[in-house]
Length: 373
Image (cartoon, helix red, strand yellow):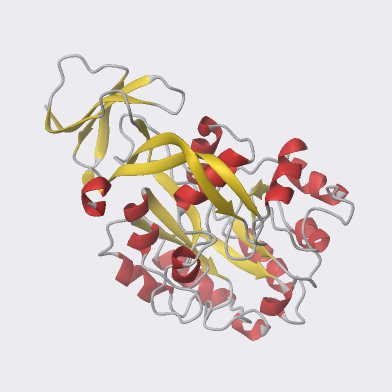
């Protein structure tokens, strides 16, 4: 007998699936687990989908900040997401505190450490290179190896002021020593120029906000993709959506898709304001936007499961396999109309509606339908 048995589900490819869970691990998976029973059984009657737990690799959830903050559980299990990765809210000075307060959360919480030691206490945390302290950063990475999964450099003018790509170059020099930790790079208003940022990045580094509609983005004034963007993609950089308040544009996303510049991962850059007031709202809405621009459900599910787990070396997550963590999202997909808004106020009507109905984190079942009732 399993602790939890998920019966009569289907995968994103419409194949039958059943999952047995013991403790905090997946114990068995098959189209049909013949003769199986569970102390708790979830019978989906062939209607609902089962995937590895969704992972959002760009959120803002250090609750003690004043600029960007949120409750990890509001961004996480309550919206179908089993794992969140905070993208640089904290640096060496405050990431230990962030770690401590996330231990009581139901959602799995990891962090990218901001190379500026203060984190985002102010918008311009990398305007003073004195805040980029190698020793302090290395010490905390050693202290929290199971929490810190990467580093973060925010490369837009409001953040770096007159330092251009110096913070990124510092992060790259650290990466030579911290070889297992990828760098996530935020792009925005220039200077620094996108071309210079991409030239400083390496294979496996993550370009977030990749599909924004800004002048310093991947699309030129004629609606064409800039040549150096192809070069970066071909060199193995990870393109991540990082929707956010200002960083997702339908037109950019469609042009990129038509030219083979598909995102590896799909993230929200969610925090309390754009969760409550939009245009982000939640991971589901971001996934629906990707369906609207032409990606298939299997493609989108991979972007929020295997892809971020692979990028950030979360080897026990993002996969439905025996022995992996029992992090699972159960959801429905229905036909209907929903107005979707990008970061520039452009709207499109989506026709596929995703609704998470159950989140399982480490074998613990959270019935979202009951919470909504």
